[in-house]
Image 1 (spheres, one colour):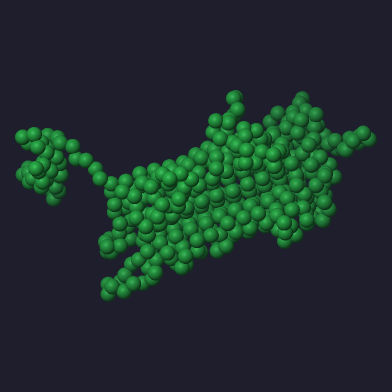
Image 2 (tube, helix red, strand yellow):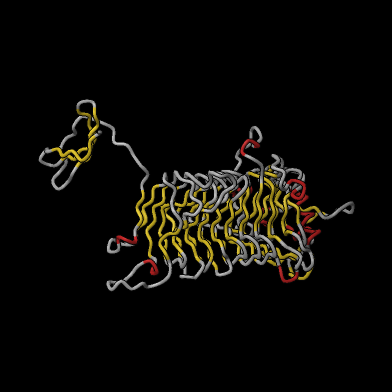
Length: 456
């Protein structure tokens, strides 16, 4: 029901029955979104904490042809004083730039049902946090917080926005994106930024962002360009067929974790760009056709239990150590991955600065030869030289040991008492001191000791 007010736009008071029959629960406005939205058992209007607003109650049509910008913004602004949920029933909403605020939660009826499409000639972002243009690049601790977007699609309509378009541009922290599709942007699909680690205000619930089941594709820039907030989390996200990288993590995104994320596409020259310190990727998949699967340029990054799959393209590298922002970067990184069919090399150690551990199992047809010694392709197992302090275990099958690379940094055997004998078929190597001089010894199962080298 709608109460008419001649002094301003219609103010909706949404009943429980209207909300349920309108499909809001199925759209992701579940019981958790409605906590605090009731007073005396009834949903309240825009003047009370826990507002739930339907954009159609403010005149938005969702017919794909009418410019709904003003009406949608009115609905968002109505929820702004106390925070609340803004619901978009199924439809295609043509819009210009919409401004997001703290404690506003946008909900659609599902990515296949609710679309916000940038109107022709808008040349802007579809959704942008309040103050973004003022804050971007400042490393400020300002910005919006405690907001969320889920169950809808953002269409950048790049064909009709030649000067630029973004799906989402955020300067803020402590937010959540879930079941969100972003595509067709002239620039990046998703842009997120915030200040340094020390910027977290006192008493905040959290500093990180949480992205789950976000899909960003066919944008001319990055799929997801994430430069903060730090310590964020990506789960089950997908970036494909973008013009730059699929996932770019840089700037203040240090400490961010990615799990089960997938990047692929022939247009996408870089799948995962780890350009901030301490980025962790677990069980992620870089699927490329030309370009680089995983590029590491900062310290303490991790690519663990991953897969990099190439198509034997002439210019194709699986995992690349690239120059960082400082002379000692990248270093201290961990790589444990399967790398398949990368046409130039599986691993490029060119900029490795040491103290890293690289363990990779390869299938590189160009690096293997058959029993007759014939080269089967062009790809190499590795190029460049790992730093002296980097530990490397690259294997391409025990039948071709010369195609494997095992490099361990120097280590010390400290003098000790003669240890117990090893098991049958084994030899134990140890150091001992005799007459004040150190000896390197081999101990056999019989207990016999053979001196291999002695201090002169």
